[in-house]
Image (cartoon, rainbow, N blue to C red; front, side, top):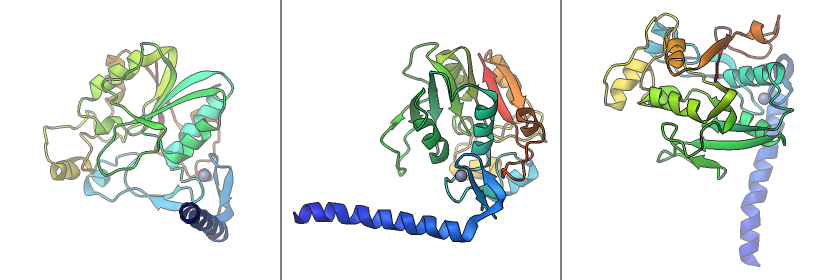
Amino acid sequence: MKKTLLKILPFSLLLNLKIVKQYLVSILFLGNKYQCPNCNTGFRKMFKCGQEEAVLEKYQVIGSGIRENCLCPRCYSIDRERLIYLYLSKKTNIFSENIKLLHIAPRQSLRKIFKNSHNISYYQGDKYEEGYHYPKDVIALDITELNYNDNYFDVIICNHVLEHVPNDFQAMKELYRVLKPNGFAILQVPISLKLNETFEIKSNTAEERKQLYGQFDHYRIYAKDFTNRLESCNYKVSLYYPADIEINLDTERFGLNKSEYLIVANK
Ligand SMILES: [Zn+2]
């Protein structure tokens, strides 16, 4: 009996904390200036996100660096996840057709949406790293060597992952292999349009990588040639700025990064 009570108490405490947190969010943030499409909630402001590193500023790396009104106080979506959701909901049929979707390194906002979409067979995976916690339904995988048959998935979402992979070409080829013909992959990376060529040198320590690329576990800064890299792996690439998703899409209101575009790679 006592054991049962002990099991229940922490859960009820957590539940209460969650309720208190949502209540505080309601008081502090709810409003009309911003709108998170992922959780369909209006806010007067959102959280700032991103990291401050000289190299990110120097090369004006899109998708990194500090962004105001970036993190949704309710569902914790960040700017690029809202851009992905807007694209998927307005330009594709993935929420109405029966599809297989592979989501690499999923974050909670899109995870929740896909899990609640009953037409989607949802596969989630991540490269397990020591010191991190992964939800039970996120399986351990290596995107340079996937344990799936050829032509298996209709859609792959690999959002800010390739920059973490030492052999990114192998990962791009492997994702292409498991994608169905006519399937598509959203392959977002932090990218600098100040650079023509992807910047990567042999740097072996975390400290060097932090200085060179702005983060200890990044292996390069992608540049204008990222599209060429994908095309060399046979993808047909389309870029979608917010206005390509919907004319007059209100980037300010949705808390989007005005410089960011979606990289959609078709097989
Ligand atoms: Zn939200």
